[in-house]
Length: 300
Image (cartoon, rainbow, N blue to C red; front, side, top):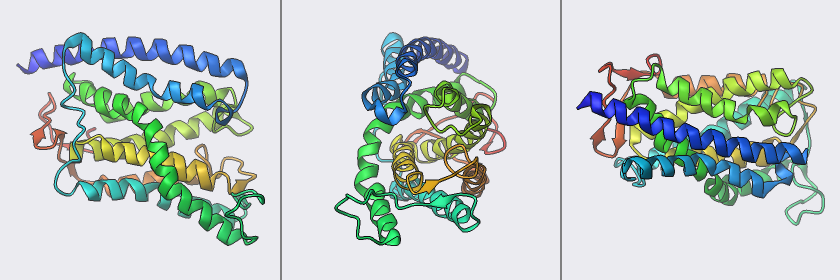
């Protein structure tokens, strides 16, 4: 039975990656052709973010797998703890990494909200606080709608299939794929890029692999896709929506391709995901790796 599951997972991954690569190539080409920052082509970016979801749906329908294992349920009884942890992650990274960057003059602080904003009071501190509160609440909710498109594919399908297929270090592989998916737009200078695009891409990949470990932990420990969606949405809203806008002059110190951001992200993830992981395909259904080995940050 396990051999049959491995073969099915591998066939599903074949379909998934065929659609993912084709769709990604098309939309990233369209974005590259504009030459604009990703923030100026929101419709193309949203379409790109839903390519992983589309790929997973095609794979599921092709193999008649259904959608029960995504899972759309909240998670185990303490699922609220997972969502809270997912929400806290970008807050901790933002406060610590950017705070150190500003304090050490590695980057300069600026009010994130423009002077014309109705939330601007003339105080830089209150400006930052207002921006943060909006990003951490309404901004995060709205951001989760676009993050859902990626997570339905990355953690809702690809991650568990990599594990069932017996791919070595599946969490590492899934995080690397997720990171490399962004790289063309970094190398073009349209996303998370500093003056040296290659270095920006390298730091970004390392940071996203760390993010991928936390997203996988949240997905597998609680058996639900929603904590991973929350983490992804909250990160985009809080880090990009407030902390990046509050920062200028960031030569590889902060930002999604900054070394301080990477160090704080890795430190947080190592602390939270240490030890043996409990794996759930969905709440109450154990996910067993083909190797039969206990799952942990070191083995996955």
